[in-house]
Image (tube, rainbow, N blue to C red):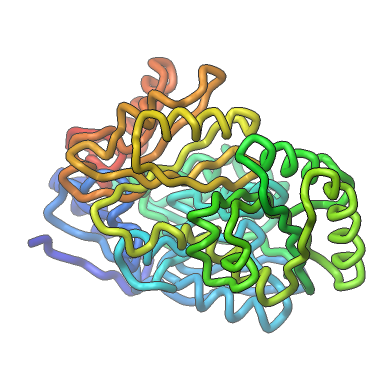
Length: 408
């Protein structure tokens, strides 16, 4: 059983990591634990629990900027932003239920450390694109900071881009500053039923290439659509191509109508309105169709959108019981397969297109994640660069050892 240390101040966090660096003691860095099952099992005897570094420390709605401790729950941040009709534009998903923990338990630090973004990524960018600055402590036990309160700053290297997606293996961040955006006043989703996967992606591509500012583009096969909690989707009983528009009410109504008219030659469109549209995209964002499954692993594949249908076909041919749905216009595939002893990793990664792509094992038991490469194996040059970065930030390998690759 690991021993846990929960600092109440950033100075205490620095002191703990400095001790661990001096003693070369490996530590697990985590917030509230909602993503502890994401990545490889960490090999450490001590835990640095950052959940005590919680709370919004600065919020200037007029300047569209917010700062908070890394252990601040996203639910708390969302509640504060809603008072001013603002939001985190990258739409961070709540993967807690998918990974077997509670809903609404995710923290700001976890979302940034894992670089998690939802369906709106195609329009607003990834989590790292909204990450302005942070304070943290490296594996050397040295406190440092990067970035500032504006997108354009000249405070040195853009370490925010490096920390986002590093899964706590380079530094323990104690607080961070985020860019925020006005929240959408209204939303509509144009749904097209009866299209196969390839036709659905063509419809999504046409919508994304239109002038109507689509902020979500997904495809739900019939079995996934049937499991939706949204009545209008569940009743359709067939696969659905979905295109979302957001913004001022009059603009949303106009743009949704124009998209429906432009795609009417492919299928009869249905327009899903505000509350149902919000619920539908929340399910897509949180990978709700695969929550509660037993004995099944979940993969996240990123591929060129045009290659999405063929990738799904190759997986279906290799794994008889595979299920999938698509986001990001066909560029993101969520795939559920029998877990077995290896989560079908050879079949899944073997289905990636020659044009490029990567597959990440999002959900599986600890035993599977310990011996199957969770993250897409890097090319030799990238792997060498990653090792050099790790050696510079964490020369003794004390921060989340084993989280991203084998070996302490």
